[in-house]
Amino acid sequence: VQLQASGGGLVPAGGSLRLSCSASGTIAGISVMGWYRQAPGRERELVAVITSGGSTNYADSVKGRITISKGNANNIVHLQMNSLKLEDTAVYYCNAKRFRDMYWGQGTLVTVSS
Image (cartoon, rainbow, N blue to C red; front, side):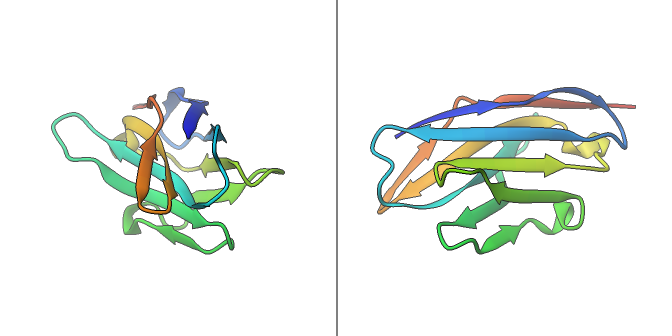
């Protein structure tokens, strides 16, 4: 499974940004896709995930501001980020779970400026 992320960039506080992730390769069997992030000096943490059935899970810190959704194809997920805060600055990693294996994208930098 290969994951290609896009959509990162520089955005002012309060602004919006949309990340997208596309899975390719052996995608049959992917049960969960989502996003994690890692800020400088901090551990990687979950942002949001969505199951193949459409169930979602969010970090408390992003609830109400960030929405994960599937694209037209089941191998694409989007992360709509609104009301961005300085503390949302991080490298965002796309993630997919296929049976017992976890796959990671290359990461896309999101910088929220004051």
